[in-house]
Image (tube, rainbow, N blue to C red; front, side, top):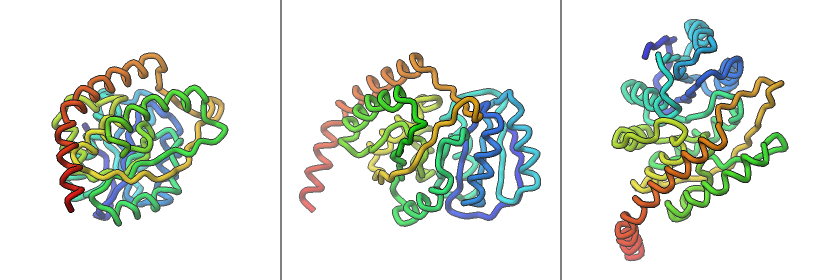
Length: 259
């Protein structure tokens, strides 16, 4: 992974954006994010559309913007993990992760980071507020994954698929490095579930989401049948692990009731 960096101020929180072939939406998303937070890092995950090169050139003149270019596409989770490792090495403690396709709400960045600063041990999970642009099939389909995730975490997770979130870097990095999963489309769901199992509290907070049409420059790599099969296989694996953890959950609840 090659890094192109501009100067930036060391803070506790940064915005981390993984991107794969998002075209002009990547530049728009980064520009929007930087209106609300100065320190923005982008991991370009083996893109072939020239968006990584354009952003890397822009970053050389932009204080606070850092761009990593992965040579090969490894998936959203793999890109996030690269960014987490670099952020931890530079002393950051928390990362707000958002998608590069413009769907996530840049104006909500300060609000989510403020919640994280007030609750540094927690993960701040966005709960999407859909408007008329949301495809009905996507909205209805996500309810299945949400139902499984609520069961797996005893109701801790409000939405399992919405990727606008703030994570404690050390906790997320540890849970990802302890598993070979969470490297591709399964990242958002499994990361939240496994962090919950590790005792990381979840604060569910609403955030608007917008879907862009192709005419508006919208980009989607979601493959309905393939990716839903991936989610099903992941939840089967998580449920097997969940049943193995039931004695631990019961013990934790007994201890909580005694205090």
